[in-house]
Amino acid sequence: MWSEIFLMCVGVICVASEKKAWNVSSNASFPGLYEIEINNTESCLSFCYYKKGCFVVNFDASAVPPCSIQATDIIVDSALLKSKENVTNYILVNVDAKRKNNFFKHFFENLVE
Image (cartoon, rainbow, N blue to C red):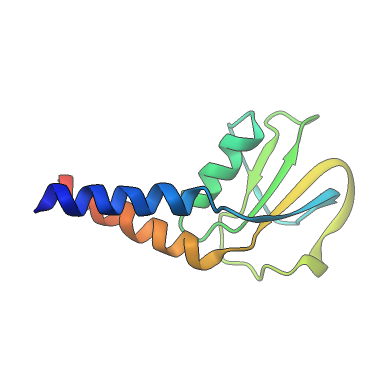
């Protein structure tokens, strides 16, 4: 029975994770984000996607480190974007899918313990 639930839920996680949708703004930066030691865009977006409360990413390929994410409760509003050369901003669109993925991730982490 558990193996059937695990396979079903893993399938849901895989399907949902492929539907990550971000609004992308070139040469734009969201204020108040925190730098993390991730050096490629895909890993940066994935880290944010699976981090509770993270819905915004700035990726500045000319910075070290280039990845900045939302780490505090802030109002996510694209009107707050500031013009900044060489920065790509990502705001998560499908928040409901993220909540479902994080629910299943949390469920399985607790199941294994």
